[in-house]
Length: 182
Image: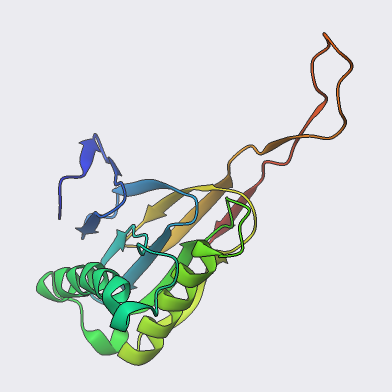
């Protein structure tokens, strides 16, 4: 585990961190934009964990995979933490969250992060069993590592839908939502 903040049975992680638990009552949270969280567990060993990463740069495949190596490092820290806690590699299953396109530009950083995570799981033989990636909104993730239960709460997105008259407030629309995966 890295320097995650633990309060009661809730742990919050931020970008660059990971957390592994074998306590059924522990819930881990994180907030994602274009970052990705890999939630990986071994259901038979009763251990699971989560990480939170963002590949630097404009494209994960540039400069000989330099940016990708940083993602590999955090994924390996999580997998090795699970193995040290009693998981077996052949039983690992993963859910991926995040990878939103939060900034309009020609480069979709969130998409690159998701593609990297999917490729890592495939290359390592880890079953990808669900999650929620892409879109235009950030997410708050709640994850119970032992059971594999995950809850996604889309962050309230606001956007101006019409140009306001001088001196008046803009009209706003909210598109928040919630999704729970077991």
